[in-house]
Image (cartoon, rainbow, N blue to C red; front, top):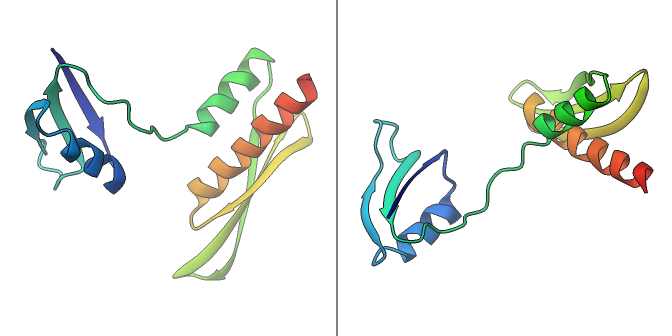
Length: 123
């Protein structure tokens, strides 16, 4: 038996967990976070989609090369519905750009593009 805790589970993953309810021995929304954290015990925990952490991956790649990613951010639109744009550069060269509804999402998309650019340049 294993114990697994998932933080910030999205609706599709929550539905997937509920479909496994016969296999789940205990299920708790726990920690007073209104269902955002799920703790469950079962024989074979399901493999759920996990959020990619592209900024973290890019930081690891950059650190292995002895450089640091630098993000430049701007937004257009209104304060209640902005569209953020971020670019990521290393050693003065731009590797990716991304947009999103908030600065974090835009940076995540820029990091994803930068990782793709770096993987293409490696062959």
